[in-house]
Length: 488
Image 1 (tube, rainbow, N blue to C red):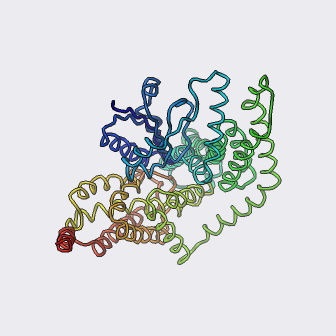
Image 2: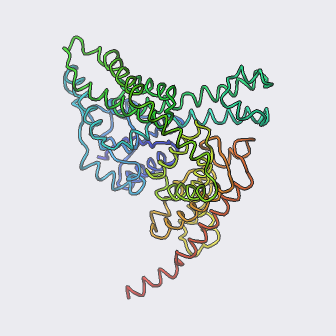
Image 3: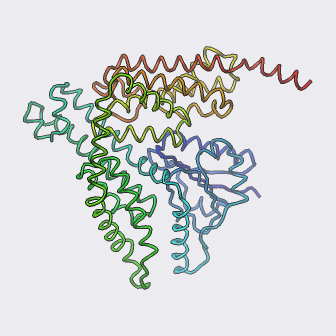
């Protein structure tokens, strides 16, 4: 009898890895003769959502995710958890491993009381198994990005309508104050929605969902409260990260430390944990974290703001190389999160360098497959077309299929190209006020400064990447002939 598999995929940004992992699981299951339905929890929400009937009929559940996924609806089913990278790299291997290693997290035939206890135990075990803070950070970043995108674009739209006068003063002004200096009330309010609404919620959302990733829903309120205090104390993005971890681990510890009789257990998630978690987090943020983190945040912003000449170029090289090194992995996301965090402090140079450098790898590969066709297989020629679309959309993951096939030639090539792009973007003084969108945000007035030179930086990095690929990769026909000769 054919096994029925259901799966959920999710990555921090919810853009590329989510859907590539879904495709990997789907193809892997079909290649082994099994049916599969994969739910993607991406940036636009859940798609191809699993129904209760789908889950009930399933023989196996696969979770290929780099963020927190709620497992409670899969109670009683064998569950196998892995990363999106594993599913992208070899979907068949993931399915085979799942068939051998999946475990039942909860007992579906137990009594209601036992069932609730087993669900809580499973959640605690899963939280404990997430030993890497990176996953918690990326969960926070994934929820934060839509707020930053919306806020940044609204700010850009407001300035597009009003021009650039009083720009610096306007960034810290309210809608009413801007209206008093000559802005129309309508556009001033659009600006205020972007600054106070989008950017204003950025740090609390980040902190809240870091805590949520660690301690589930009871950590959400303490984390967001800690994020608000981080903003009020001037510790900003870095303080928000610390607040999220303090809240999450505090609540996780309290859950295990506090023992209540069954009659009062219902008070834990809605009263006791949020109250004590918020109290501890808030006091630590005020008395321990706020002042030093504020000083560090101010020093970093001042350093980046005052960078000139070679120091800017060096930072651009580092950020660019990081974006290409693992193409959407931890190093890439670390550079991206660093740059996004600086937007709140009105430092826009790193964001421009990071987006340009993230576009360069797939664009360079697409160009190379077009110009130097003998260096690539027919499958790679087709993948190059998709890489071009992904590249202009700032989806660095479009380079992954090429890097997986030939990592020792492709990865150095794209790193050199991205480093060049990052260096030129910083040298040209290009600033980007929105954290995503690729070429689609470039036409928006005031979204990007020094636009023509910024485009030059992207084009130069793309050309350098393609040139490096030409030098390092050998013609495919020659490679086949050599292998055949060796075999003879």
